[in-house]
Structures are given as C-alpha cells and as structure tokens.
Amino acid sequence: MLIRKNRTAGRNTNGSYTMTTKTKLLASTFAALAALPAAAQDLPSANDGVLKIGLIYTLSGPAGALGTQARDGFMLAVNQIKEIGGMPTEIIIVDDEQRPDLAADKARELVARDQVDFVVGPIFSNILGAIHKPVTETGTILISTNAGTSGYAGAECNENFFVTSYQNDQNHEVMGAYAQKQGYQNVFLMAPNYQAGKDSLNGFKHSYTGGVAGEVFTELGQLDFSSELAQIAAFQPDALFTFMPGGMGVNLVKQYSQAGLTSIPFLSAFTVDETTLPATQDAAVGLMGGANWAPDMDNAANKTFVDGYLAAYDAVPGTYAMQAYDAAQLIDSAVRSVGGDLTDRAALKAALHKADFASPRGDFSFGNNNFPIQDFYLVKAEKRADGKYQTAIVEKIFDDYKDNYADQCPL
View 1 (cartoon, rainbow, N blue to C red):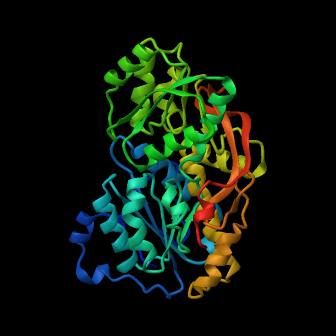
View 2: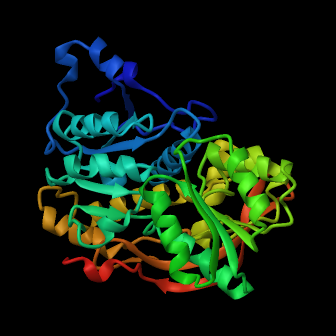
View 3: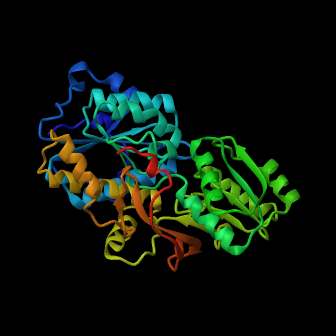
C-alpha cells in the first residue's frame, strides 16, 4: 500500500477522512516534495490498477472555506462509496492558494508526475483558466465542481472537460428573472473584476431588461466596500445585485447592514450561502439568492448527503460541497460502467456523459458541451431549529435549463 504520510493534509476530526485499506488520502505541496528523496517521488504508473484522482482547490486564505467545503463534499462521497469505481483509489489533494501560476504548476505535476486519471476542481474561474489546458491537452479528464466559464461552455468546449456545477451565468440569471418579476427598474450591479464576475453580471442582464443604476467591478479579494456602499446610498436603486463569494461576501453583507442600506433589497448568488452564513448569521437572514440546490431539498439522495455531511463535519453543506460530492459519484458511475478499464478513454468519457448517478439536486444530465442541464431556484437564507444557518428553496425559476452557450460547442 502506497502511503505518503509526510504529504497528508486535510481534516482529521471525527474520523471524517478514515479510508479503507486500499484508499489513500494524500496532499501535495512544493515544500513537502522538496523534502522527499527522489526514490520516494516515484509513483505507480497510470495503468497499475489504482484509480488516481487529484483534487485542486483553494484551501487557504479568505476563500479557503469554499475549497474546504468542496474537498469535504468529495471526501464524504469517497467514504460512503468506499472504493471509487470498485477500484483501489488514491486521492491527492493540493491547495492552489488562489494563485493561477501555482495552480498551473500543480496541475502539471498531478498529470505528469502523479499520473492521475482525473483532476477535480477548482473553485475560481481564473484558476480554471490556468489549469484547463495543462490537464486536458494530455488527455486527462478535468472535472470542474464549481467554475464554469462561458468560453468552455461554448466554442472552447473540450471532450476531456466536464462540469458538475453550472455555467457561470446561470445562478445569476435566476436573480435577473426574479428582479424582472418584482418589477425593479433600477438595479445596482456589483461583482469582482475577473471572468466569473463578468459572467455574473452578463447572466443577470440576460434575464433582466430593466434599468441599471450603476455597474461596478471591484478588486478580486476586496474586503472594504465603503466606497461602493456610498455610491449605492447616493443612487438609491430599487435593488442591489451582487456576486461576492467567500470572505468578500461576509464583509459586504455585514457592511451593508452597518451602512443602514437594508431597506434596499439585497439580491445575490454565491454571496449568502452555507460558506458565509456561519459568519454573517442573522445579518443575512431573509436575503434572497439564486442556486441550483439547497440543503432542504426533499429527496433520498439529498438526505443521505446532508445528513452525512452534518455527521462528518458538524456543518451545513453548501453547493460547493454538493457539486464535489456529485463529481465523486460521477467518477464512480463511469469507472464502474467500463469495468475499471481506464485505458479506453472514449468509453470512459461516454460513460461520464451518461451521468448515471442520483444527484442530491434531483434532475441532472449533461448537454452536448458536458455542462449540466438542471433546475434552478430562488433561495432564502434562514436560521435552522438547531441554531445553524442555511439557504432554503422559495420557488423554482428554471426547469431543465440548458446554458446559453451550448449551441456554440462543436461536440
């Protein structure tokens, strides 16, 4: 059994990462690698009968909570399934530190040195842009459990690239449709200045035809919104729509309340969710968002997922965890379908495209571009009976919704 104890990282509480004797949880950092003797760095080849999966997520810094949820969701599925695809399984976890250059290097390492069969991740779209080519050009399969940029859904789609989340625009389209339904005519728009931020505002405007009071792109990672909040106070829009994931969202929600702007409806996606609610708590209760799932969805697969996550991590899972959980299920279903034969890449990709698993979100299938066709919902933040916070379904906005870029994909 291959074990790299000096490369191990991740949770060690509640036995949540307890593995079977054939499954190894590994972590990779450049510092640890430098400390390894050359002989210890030789891993088995890709056809040694071991399924190798590399996870690449932002696990440190203000956005580390997002990657932590994704990692934990994936590992929950691993522990529930025991052996992914019925094969001895090796999991290698790396932290991209939200640095595209570092992420690209680590992706190349996973493919060339570790010879993984799948790379799973990342959280941020700029990281996806950095790792997409280094992974897919080698024939290795990349499964994004969060980032879903418009280009990769359309003309730049790739047969080696699958997405278990959404196309970036879609959750924001939910809020555009909601704003339209509410009759808002003057909405202030705000997002970070990177591809996902641009996709978010484009998505909102795709289903909202009213006026725009202002449109602001902030720095990625910005935590002080006093200048932007002053603009909102001056404009007095019908509503604010924003996309501010992670620590950005925590600070924005708190500062919005402190600035006395709560009379202006706060609409968002990936800003008020299970990664930020433990910090924002009551300041976020009642705020509306767009999502493809919520923890209160009533189906057997979701109960297994949510109950399992709560038991393992004593936290309410968010979409980052759910979508990574589904990535593990997706890999398991495909590898079992081909009888563990990882050499027949065409058959493996065809099995992935079938998406033969039960998602906690319910309806799930792949479009021609390997992006999901799924339902989308208006959700609202609430406090649970156990004192924890979560989002809950208010109403379905889109049914079996295919993204707007799939027709540009030649697959």
